Amino acid sequence: MAINYRKVAIVGCGFVGSATAFALMQSGLFSEIVMLDADMAKAEGEALDISHGVPFSKPCDIHAGDYDDVADSSIIIVTAGAAQKPGETRLDLIKKNVGIFKSIIPEISKRNFKGILLIVANPVDILTYAAKQLSGLPDNRVFGSGTVLDSARLRFNLSEHLGVDPRSIHAFIIGEHGDSEFAAWSSANVSGVEISRFCEMRGYFHDHDVAKDNIADEVKNAAYDIISKKRATYYGVAMATKRICEAIIRDEKSILPVTSIQHGRFGLNDVALSIPVIVGKDGIESEIPFSLNDEEMKKLRDSAKTLKEVIKSCDLDISEE
Image (cartoon, rainbow, N blue to C red; front, side, top):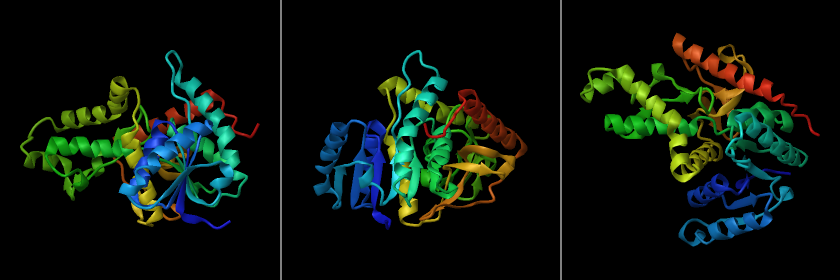
């Protein structure tokens, strides 16, 4: 079955899936959006609601469907997953969501899917790893939203601090999308100007490291802060997902810190985490010569170790049951 590059599917119609469909409807990237959910009525309701915005946007057929309806999609976005409940550990949540993926990913694979499988459900690094193993698809076609949103939050916070357009800031959060993530300050710049020099230009002559640490901590805790106030985050990640889809559909060759399977880069193997790569129509097209200082290298390896320990402690048997 040929790929329909104007078609996208979203598996999971909760807050994140529905916000992503809404963002993609407005983007004009696709002429067809298929929404899937374990609750078909939920998918139908969200599709109908979002469809009513089409007269104000670009023509787009938005409808609920099943796995047979998505086989020719250019991208399948998986947002499905359980939310963490009070008293539930992170490991409990991971096991539950891996179980959900065992029911989703094989259904996609058996239909000879030839497009990109984009994982947005959390914990995205663990679930991207599981999706790769369950799908049997090439590494370049299975990846996660990773730290694309975290990096956007970093750029936003820096823009507020420095009084400059966030689009002129080049800085990445890398590693796990979670507590062990960190800012790669050694490569951060504002249109080629090193961050500390730009701070001085803006009148900040002291405590650059303190300011950077505070900003990085704000980014790391942003989701917790939002969840404490409104119970969930979904607009930011929907926009991050739209950005990844743009890079794929427009073959932009954009550099994005998506979650990808590592095979020796920085000495990392058999783990999925975020390091900037080039993203285009074939998914992850190539690595880039991204440099880290010694401290950042240690943080990256510690982050990878954290993820591997989670996988091991969960005893993830990701074979089909």
